[in-house]
Length: 217
Image (tube, rainbow, N blue to C red; front, side):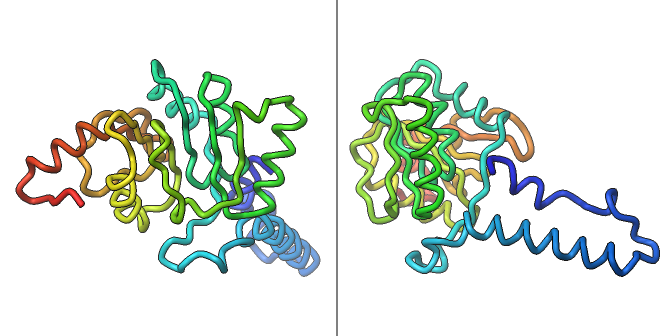
């Protein structure tokens, strides 16, 4: 399941010819895509009804390069880490392996169960990894000094406002693929779909206060 979303998004034209397709082939292709969509929707849709429409973000797993970039930007740091929308838990496990006390927040109960089962079979202690079926939008994140998120561009401004209100000055925030629209960027790594952005809260607050065009909320 870890990379099933990538399979669903692949172009299937190289597998089945597009000129005068045979009816059986067309029917089979349709059934295959329907089945794949069904599997994908099982993992992405549960829990959506509990979240306001403007905050909904579909499940899209991080790839290996993206996860590696995140961990590079976390080098030298310690403490508690929150992964917002942790999905199948791959980033949480990576952070735990690097010594972080990692908590994954995920509203989808199937993904939470999947991540917890992986933690059990890997023998990861509960003191290092926790997966919570919890809406992080309603959770106070002030006890975390590291936050990672792979969400969607439409929610980044609201997320920035929440983190500015809650995180301590020593916290570092790392976002995958989508930066905060009005935060001064500290550093980025990777390119294209694998690009990640790191922000230190003390510097962000200082620069936002000194910018006449931006108000620190």
